[in-house]
Image (tube, rainbow, N blue to C red; front, side, top):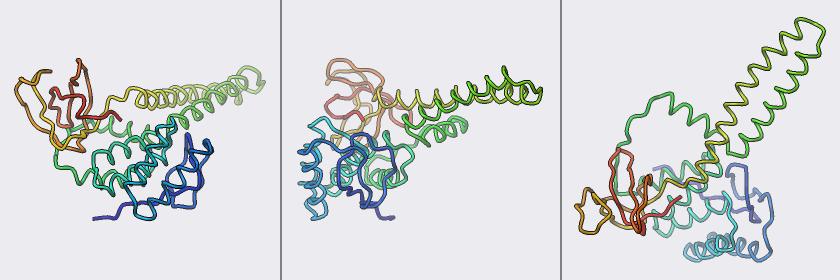
Length: 265
């Protein structure tokens, strides 16, 4: 089995990092409060000293301060993996991936963590175009797509001015057709940014935290057990009712599970 990529021990805490995970020498982008910085340093030291439970506690304390980042989620996922809490590990790898969707280190470690889960669920085959579009969308974060779309909008305005103000026919043609292409690219990249933003806000995906969780035919403890899923399995929440969540798993099976047994990404 390929070894996980553990290193992400930067010197300070970032609130919204935009770069992919790299080895230990990378510094964070935006310093947090002094106490959070102290916790960050202590957590990294605890991890390096193999005190993984202590590292988890300290990283969680930073989250309790209302701070988050890709690096924080990534380090916390690594620490949870080391303590054997696979469900929590997968949860935080997925949260890190939302902030940095093209990060290969996160995807690598997530795949390793998922290989330790008990359930082996075959995904419903997906139309290849949909898969290709998703991979394109995941190439950049929401923030990056927003900047790219603004760049194309600026290009639309520049080419529009070229079309309207140029005296040369060739320049007017270039401006017109270039503007059409830029408009299409602006629409596509804006849609990508909106889709990434929606994924960050909706939080429809969740991870099973319980060792074994029965999925029932209705939101009632006396209802029929349809199947059982285990810690670390990813599900999509489609509805909620009181203390119950209706979920769909990767193979399309649907049912109700107690909300306390899952945690939303």
